[in-house]
Image (cartoon, rainbow, N blue to C red):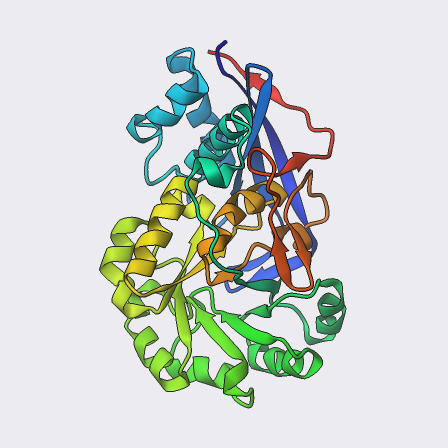
Amino acid sequence: MSLSISICRYRLLFKHPFGTAHGLREGTDALFIRMGESGFVGYGEVTLPPYLKESISGAVEVLNSIVAKQAWNGERLLEALDNLPELNERTNGCRAGLHTALIDLLAKQRQLPAGKLLDINKRKSPITLMTLGISPINQVALKLNELPMSGALKLKAGDAEGAARIRLIGQLDQRRLFIDGNQGLNSVLEAKTLVQGIDPERILGFEQPFGQDGDGKNVELSRDLGIDVFADESIQNMGELEEKASQFTGVNLKLMKCGGLDRAKAMADRARSKGLKVMLGSMSESSLGCTAMAQLAGGADIVDLDGPWLIKNDPFSGIAMEHGRLIVPNGPGIGANLRAELEFSPICA
């Protein structure tokens, strides 16, 4: 039986406007992919914030082109992913969605958890993060109260109120703090000022404080504060990992940026071999994308997969949080289940 592929455009909406150094947004455009074969169904997700060059419309064009090539089956399409010209460094989100759907489908066919199919070994329980975006000081307490318990808090920075907001959060909540600059900081001094007055033991680390042309500053920041500095935008593929590993002590891997669970796993393995800490992040995906990435959690130091707790119209269920620990479903497939009525349109060859 040939593989059927259908898609659903969707707009994931935040509970509150979400602010980063890139700007403020109400939600994120997404594309859900559904694959059917031999009575089994697999799902994948493409979620793309507006600051990325890849678009949902572009992903639909790519999928149409791939489906038109031939009548695929799941195994054949999975084997072909790295040989299709439509899938390149400009379409990593689309490849990630396709790969997730295929892994979900094939793992269900074999009655295996996706982690088994990907040969992922669970070794440790990572520190979990919940995120507070850039927002007015008077909204901080409300947003803190809405978040579940986690191992630490991730705080977006890069605005004029950043230092005051971080100090206030440090007073209101006793969790450790992880600062995400989103390339919005200009100097080591500015980064250090952000956490001035906070017990150094509470600072879990910084993520991409400077633009990619300022990667050399990360070593100084890490040394001066005695903390880890994680790459995000600076390391998005294996080549950049090889080139820039010495400028960071950790790397944040995101499914939409690296292009699939297979590539994320390969980068995580290589990062650990180079002495870097591994963090798993997201682009505000639903429970589908975050549960897929959580398959790698057993090999990560930090997990930042909080999209399901930040959005208000999540059409899937999957990962959960209990007493600050990430709970990953261990049934067949990725472990995410559709819980809403979505309208999927078939892509026909």
